[in-house]
Length: 132
Image (cartoon, rainbow, N blue to C red; front, side):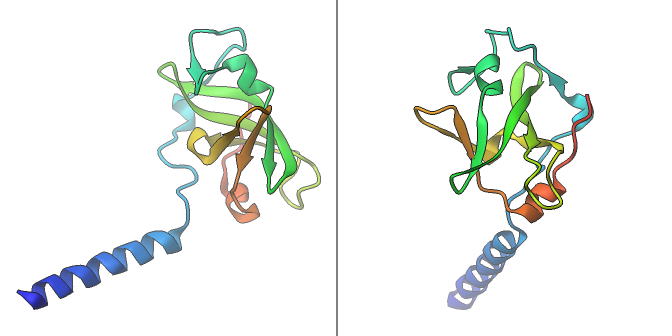
């Protein structure tokens, strides 16, 4: 019985290591064909108490530096699932792109019109472009 528990523990350890090595699931379950832009005058759809208009006013920051701004809010079945972020031109190899950022990848900064994004440049480069 102890051998069985030890084997299970080893398997769990390997699974956790594999998940950590894989990094965040940046584009998890987002099919761009299913998404639609929300009009900024919609008040019936919110995310964490923020209207579409308020979300579109957010600056995107990473480590205290502004790296972009929200251009559009994307929804699937009237649920906010992603933001279109216009990346700053000063990001080498990344700037001047409108990328789709899953809503779970941002953290709203309380009391400020900012959202924190912790994705690396490599992860940002893998995000899909949004062409409206």
